[in-house]
Length: 248
Image (tube, rainbow, N blue to C red; front, side, top):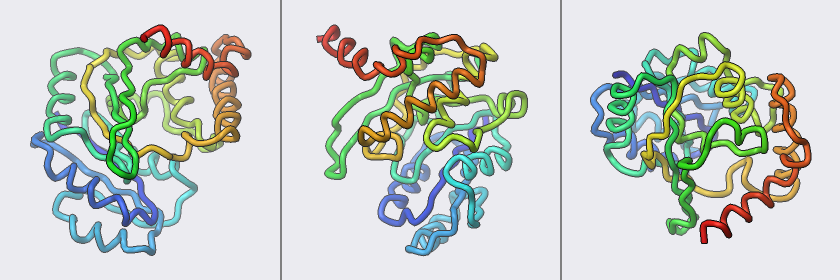
């Protein structure tokens, strides 16, 4: 099974070499690796040149942002499965893609959903985010699985479209809502911890970010004609705290 991995980058020289090393170490023997650069000027292109032997497709040109770059990668991808590996993230071990490919071969599904680990700049693990208790109904109250832990069949993008560019930080939420709720794709929890993510990304910091993603969650659900409770979405942080306390 051919797995296409897309890395979007822009001036990512401080972190992207670890991302490349993570790809290089993968045991799976059928990987298509696409690197979509937004026109970096900080040394990223030199690192891309250094690791060109593992890169199947590379473009460097201005884009309209993260999701536009992802769409470019998806259009160029030729694999059976598509996954995203951000330019400051790594796979948790050398067998991730082999395990994901085998899981899809064993299960007749459109998508697999796994877990991630979040780490800080000192390299310390600060959180494991598991999708074990997630299901698509939770999208209606503002909860989605970790985007990098989802592997989609390529054909889903051909059937149902790609990331919509009128979202600032919520296009992944909209796409997941569209695929899982509107089109009811088949999926299964893999329990594979796919990715170690550096905390502090575009959608993970501050009250203003919380308000923006709340607005975009509501926009995503409305656009896909999904009925939801506005207040529950707004209070999703409260539900997270309650869930954490219940686990304890």
